[in-house]
Image (cartoon, rainbow, N blue to C red; front, side, top):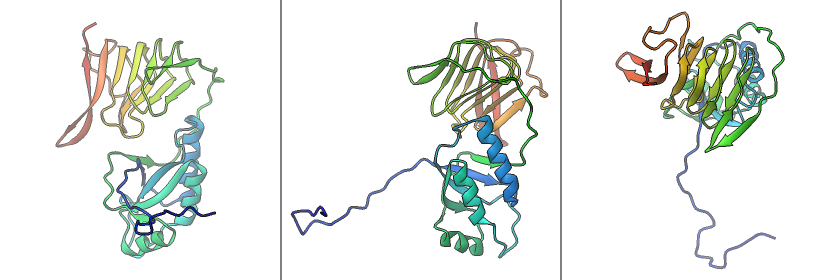
Length: 254
């Protein structure tokens, strides 16, 4: 039986403003097969990284000719198969925008994007040793790891901070949507603000990483850290300037 208000003068619905957390997928290729392989590799390396997240498809980086369409039908299927729910499109020319609207996507031109999720060609898979199950506890909303991470092991703190109470060895990878704290040597990869949180930071007792990244801005060991921070107690944050974002790495008092 339908539920009906007793007062017939009241409206049968209300319209209110609402906010929804979105991710942005910045396309750099029109080849859907390449995208599918890259997303499959992302999911294999970081299970649960996308968890039915609504996504804006950003085509502004593609060199599309006027009137040239993108295979949005197959793209939508690939995104849904990998835990992303397409809701809009950004940077589309009029013909592509009309095509997208016909598929139920909205015009996301006004969407404010803090950091796009760029999908490029998948990297070659590197064989690793079998990953051990890791014992993890929650403390104050953070994911806490209390044992060393060996090469090939990966931990992802979805939607929270990550605290590692031991060493992160070379070849290991720690990822968090928030901050990363390593109370030991950081010799592997550390990716903070994985979903675009530009306020995230990385802290390490011994800063000697293979790679550090905050909200998509990264630095590898090929660009050696300054001597005053390499192997020292240090923190990494994102600094914005006229030339764009860059990582600021500073030593801390031990």
